[in-house]
Amino acid sequence: MLHNPKLDKPATKWWHAATGYQIYPRSFCDSNGDGVGDIPGIISKLDHLKDLGIGFIWLSPVYASPMADNGYDISDYRAIAPEFGTLDDFDRLVAEAKARGIGIVMDLVVNHSSSAHAWFQAARASREVAEHDYYVWRDPARDGGPPSDLKACFGGSAWTFVPEVGQYYLGYFSPEQPDLNWRNPALRREIYNMMNWWFDRGIAGFRMDVISLIGKDVDAGVFEEGPYLHEYLQEMHRETLAGRDIVTVGESWSVSRDTALLFCGRDRAELDMVFQFNHIVEGWDPLHGKWKPKPFDLVRFKRVLDAWQATLADDGWNSLFLSNHDLPRQVSKYADDGTYRVQSAKMLATVVHLMKGTPFIYQGEEIGMTNAAFTRIDQFRDVETLGNYADAIAQGITPDEFIAGANANGRDNARTPMQWSGGGQAGFTDGTPWIEVNPNHSEINVKADRADPDGVFAHYRRLVELRREHPVIVHGRYVPFAEDDPAVFAYAREMDGTKLAVIANFTGAEVEFEVPEAQSGRGTCLLANYAARDSLDGTLSLAPYEAVAVLMAGS
Ligand code: TEU
Ligand code: CA
Image (cartoon, rainbow, N blue to C red; front, side):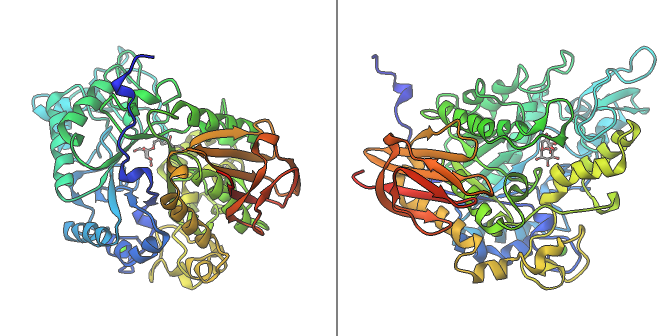
């Protein structure tokens, strides 16, 4: 075979062996009793994260914002929201994290700004100013109505009329989040300068919000992965990312196995990884989406994750996650948040963290936090839930039906306050929290879990440590087995004669599992959520949600 220099093994980067941790600042820790989490609160909890062993924090947006979408609507890209703190607090966070070996990865939200951004305020007042073209404007339809019937993600029309200029602007998510016009080179320059300004403050990278939308062709109706996307990402790379020892993760709800390497292939000079959602959307109703989840199907779920492992086996890099601030709590969604909460939270973590890629822990996941169980619509806070509620009621869905869907899959599940202790308001705040704490904090909290040597935290800490200790976890080839087993998730990782086998029972029942001949053997148990096993041979009787990782001998 001809030697292709592009396919040489890339240098190992710090983030290959690191574990990420996502903080949703509003819900993490409130230092001043106003009910809203803040940066000084985060600093006060850095030792918790150091103990966990993580390499970097993905910090959801802390920029100045009217908080229509909790910071995913930025009104000043170079300022910190006063309710979260000051720029000094932010610099202190970077320094204090760095002193603990932790990088700060910021959230880059540049598909849209807030409607309160100075650019938009200028843009909406006149067609003559340069900023007008920073946004996406279209003339009214003949009847004066919106240019198309495009719906906004958070309910209502995606088009909003501004009488001052006689035009509609695009707000793909909501009217408070006008889309930026990436076709305008001056706008792109502004964004690159802003990114470099943050890099100069010492950040470790960016998570890029809905980045696959920036190359849209509005008139052609192509929004996701539009014709200009990769041109812009390559320009962004040249202008800001090149030569820096940082990490980038692009969020994309559309990226597929066919397009993943366009973002993160090593010859592309674009991004390091993508957050893809194929395994998440697999569990949604094809017609009614997230509000009507389908029953969990392990075989299909494995098929999606196995396929992504195969696609990015030799080029690109996977991000590994089941949870974030937009998703339900994983122990509630994929496992058992009742009787087997602790065992099943550990099982999920084992399966995810021992795959090839960079794992992300969402705040509270490391103690097995569960979904909220709201009963009234006024308990919800999320713009998506509330916006879709109005639309759903108008379509004849009953409030109870809607609330059931929101409890199963709504975003507020992940946004109830971090449960630090069993005390009042879970130790999150001395005041009244912006969203109710989960009443189960009396039982599920950091203090109690960490005091237990068999707690969920101890298991996560071990997983994070194992990744640093064993190159086979970072680089080994992923080899799934028993792919058609409806109850067990099983795979091996292999490298230079070393083999790690992972076997996990995804059900609340005892399961008999026949170890395939090729995977049989004895070794050292690296991790288990029941008694250690060192022999994988013949028929294993797996306890409910049992998970085991064995480093095979002779390897
Ligand atoms: O999310 C992208 C996005 O498309 C979500 O709205 C997603 O479809 C939804 O949450 C699934 O239920 C990103 C951010 O992660 C999210 O918090 C923001 O609201 C959104 O972009 C707009 O910035
Ligand atoms: Ca506060």
